[in-house]
Image (cartoon, rainbow, N blue to C red; front, side, top):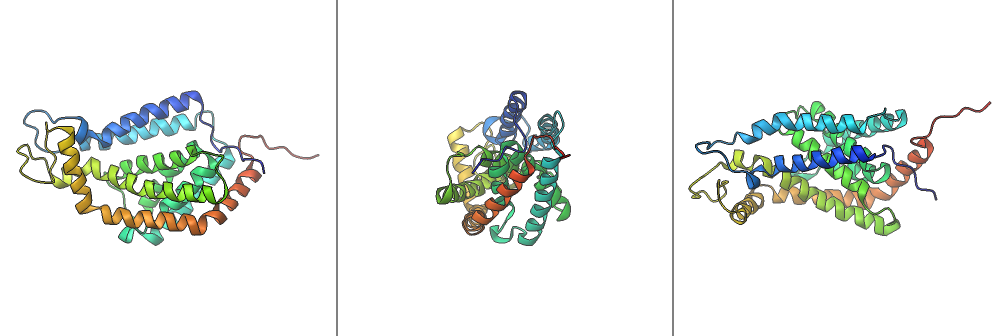
Length: 269
């Protein structure tokens, strides 16, 4: 069985832009652990700046990925899967971590490639936020994190097939749930738990403290606020991939073969 071509090819320049943007994005997520607020700045202002910068960063990456014109078939597939993602998010609503968005994102990235997975993560979270009135300062961070997960799914080893592939994707789904939860917790940690220079507040971010001390506080913050939620999402991802994954992968791969991404359409005479 031939392997379908990726829907969006990652050229060297696109890959370089993606790497630079990802490094900058990680710095924006992890600013509490990397930067110290200026003297006298006791409120969490940095995330406000990042809320403005991160959408610009995403736009640069999206423009670079679609440089040269995106294949019309890839664009159509992106629209279809994004629409399905909207429906899945509206149905599952994330209650108790029961969120089906990552299930299709992972399978889509696996079949259509890393570049497509990155775009699908962005568009599906953006569209579903509009549908569910979930637009807020957190949205660019959700989009970037989901984009990384779609990208990662496309970079998983291609030679793994059959039951081993399903097991690999289920394990990735578990990782994705905790990765997504931890990163989103990290950027607004000082907002929710506060900044405490004295270090008296157990869960608060302490400016100037060692990395180990702030990591310890952040660990307890996750444990007490979102670990149960992330565990529910991890179980949902794993179960959905194990139960529905084989059929969905077969359907997506059949669609990819028929689409023949990157090849010009020919007409018989």
